Length: 498
Image (cartoon, rainbow, N blue to C red; front, side, top):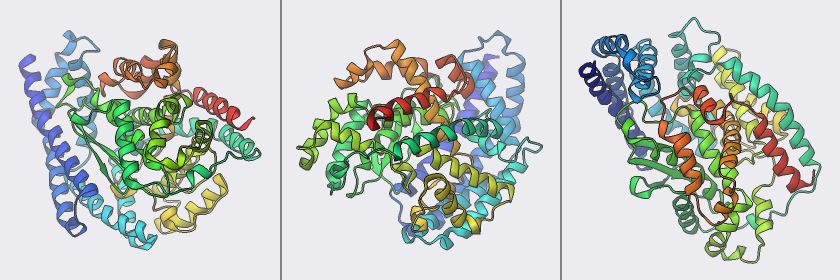
């Protein structure tokens, strides 16, 4: 069996690395590429994506998988090889249902759509993006068709990012969370708001950049195995476990770059801590998008917006921005944790953030089901913003054009953000139980204890285990929104005197 497994790994590695080549092309498109190159880049990504798909779905890999699976009884169930065979079988069967021609067309469409999205966002003109978006949703509907019959047409799309998760299960969790978050937001709205004048200033971009680099380094992001760049919409990408890159966006009107960078560094630390033994295999990545978001949201919010972190890092913030030297840390803490419904998801406070996600999920489902036309998306978006947050975007740039995801074809992705919030609080409870002086460590700028716990319990496994199984292994239970709701209630009751 070992010879067959070795050959299988070599073939899979080639397909896996072609996927990473496509990631390099995508990173360059979002960070460096001139707009005039969009057509050529769409062709390049289409070719590479098709080749990766054809290589992975080859008959040779299928035959080797069958032969290895028939002889794997000698493997320990949790061993790298046993988990690899299980994941390969799952992914092989899924990808074999998708024609290579579709993969090429979808990749070409998404690459070209990104440029159209940027133009539309910058001019707040949805009509510029509408044809590309309609084609993307048509293609994603076609993708679901490859997996019929299904419980729900959205299931195959969700499963691409959250293996094993069903649309009905997500909606059930959201139904539990939504009324409690709405109640909390209402209670907060009736209390005096914190003083936020300290955030209403000009924050020099180069100082924000240096601050972001320092924050990521302090967290433990390894710059010798990564780099920070600017992008219209921040993201993290992995070319290898020794090349995990992050991006951020800097605006002089806000200090958002700091927490944006901490968010992306949280993703990257996860990838950098995956066991090197999993490199060149599909296991060398996070277990799912929700698990990934639990890490980024934990670092961005539970750590980054805490008093403990500010006791360590606020002097650095004051050094970079002298206008804050007379602002007490407590004032700054309350300001960065102010609850105020806003238009932009990535700048949303913790209490309202999930509302942004639920809105997107409901719109995606409506379009995929055919109940909502893409042309009607702006008005439907604005209506849900009024219903959920009581505000109406003044233009589409601050509304339905704000996120990069749909231009990349990432339909099924958004619910993982809210699920990640919930998982982050579950994990945080466990970390605190095992590391009782965690807060004191963070106050001293010592993050080795937190990183070490996360690496041992979660990060090193990569995608060896399905997300639901991994959550149980780490926390002892399935996804449970109560720890997150308790975290929100405790934090904002103290800040707002509820």
